[in-house]
Image (cartoon, rainbow over all chains, first blue to last red; front, side):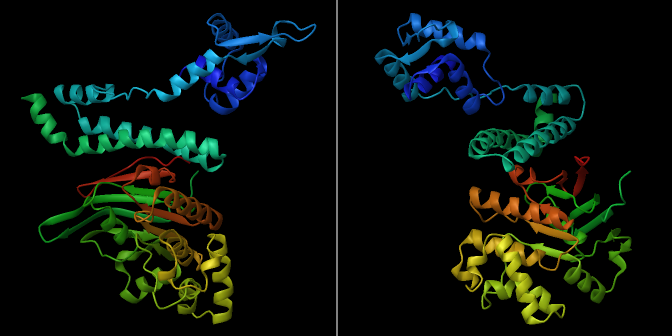
Length: 173
Length: 227
């Protein structure tokens, strides 16, 4: 995720101090990885240099009392970012596929690799489901996104399990 | 140290003609646990559930419930067990269409001799708990799919069963309704200390469980429960 454009997007709803911006980011998007202060200020410095934000100091203020506001160029930048689709990541040739093929190639049990992975995926899905059940709407949406991706992995895993004999025959041919 | 498991299938085998539906299948669940039986269509997971619930008799192996051998019980004994100790939720609610939702939920209590007024009082409590108190007077056909399935869950829990068998309980629902049904089912089972045997092929549904047993070609692999 682009931290710079996310901060710009937050600033579009109103000017903020760096500290408030970090807090707002962490509350909305940073549950897993809160922003470091250093990153917030270095990102704001870059945005300032590129003319995407401007700064208005308050009387007697130190560096952390700078108030950042988005510029017209900044609004255009956010609009451009939001209208661009993200590149879908196809995850081709995943580590898991490699492990299954290698297991079969070396005469090991490919199903064992898949079973171990399924248990681990489900363990994570249980954690996310618990977090979602006790959480607010933002938690639910974030967890659901992760859950659907893990579910997609599991569907691939089940299909591979069903094709394991064919795969073994091909790999060992 | 863990308590003894409440329900145990040990080395079950069952064939339909030439087709082997269960092949030395073993699985167990403790009181208060939610166990997901997962696997592709035709893997044998529903057959395993039916054996656990005393609906099907295996060709060999034993099913033990609370220390009692279910496989050697008479039909009358097994039927009494299903009525008083077990609750069932199916993919399609299987509510009685001629009865109101309230009467449907009260039915298991009426069948075990509870008087109408008391049965309906308890049933009303369960409908409210499942957030469908407003459909009490409606017939199942007048309720939405999600509401009907919550009524079915209320009916499964109304006798305070010690084991709830849920066979693809969200299979006919959209994601949002399915989620809510699972949340309510698991929360209610946890409150009453019931074990849940959940048959599903959906990982997101299985994620409400404490552990899973994967059935493939009639064989079972049970992962350790996350207790």
